[in-house]
Amino acid sequence: MVKGKKTDFAEANCGIARSLKIIGDWWSILIVRDAFKGNARFGEFQKSLGLAKNILSTRLKKLVAEGILTVEQDEESPSVNRYVLTQKGQNLYVVLSALWQWGEENCFDGDELKWSLVDKKKGEAVPKLNLVARDGRVLGPRDFCIAMKNETES
Amino acid sequence: MVKGKKTDFAEANCGIARSLKIIGDWWSILIVRDAFKGNARFGEFQKSLGLAKNILSTRLKKLVAEGILTVEQDEESPSVNRYVLTQKGQNLYVVLSALWQWGEENCFDGDELKWSLVDKKKGEAVPKLNLVARDGRVLGPRDFCIAMKNETES
Image 1 (tube, rainbow over the protein chains, first blue to last red):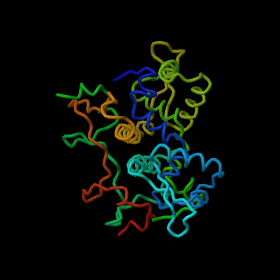
Image 2 (cartoon, helix red, strand yellow):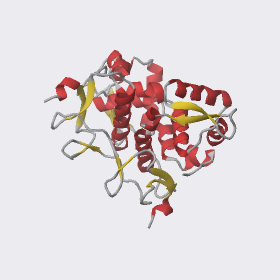
Image 3 (cartoon, rainbow over the protein chains, first blue to last red):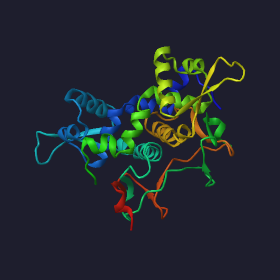
């Protein structure tokens, strides 16, 4: 187990803290979710999220500045911007899937949730994400820790 | 692709939105991270996070109310509370691992990050989380969608 001071883990040496600094608010993550769903125009995000224009505008600018979204011209209406996920933004699909699956398992009663993550090719539900060790063992919450990188080299 | 109205996806039918309603702020996630690291006392969280007492207190109460943390009496000092992850809270380790790995890959330069997720048993770095289909294919961001559950039944 690693104990960290604020200066260690609130920023400098924590992948979680640094991620949250970029996407760590409710609206930013829901904007990214909507971008995965195919929303791209300001008005589409606004309609989906029911968010005040100034708040949406601030969040979109931040996500562009952080390299999560990029701005493209709409081919049909050149005066309209499209906000599209960059590769860095697309890489967030694992985080969003983990959030979805945790919510699905822990935040709904019975069959209350009517939607599911579905494998497009087969039309089957996507199995739960597992953290898997190099030798194939599925790792539980007590099976791994955060350690100095040089400790991992054998 | 599924398009959702706010009423669909901001709450009722979105596992992501409902997750974020519970853990969707920076401090709550960092408190959960610290609980995984073994922090349990109010003072330990405060020292680690450098957070104002009233803010920390509000966040801890919310996490307890949501069933992420539970309060136990400290065996050494019975007047002191320990905040310990419930099963629901422990289930968040996949979300935290996904955030860590995304941060590790996208938010640090070169070998700037000195820490890594390590398999305790083998001392090896934990491989990147993958979303895997039932037939074993690794799914990319465009290989799955959110669909009505009955569409997934074949």
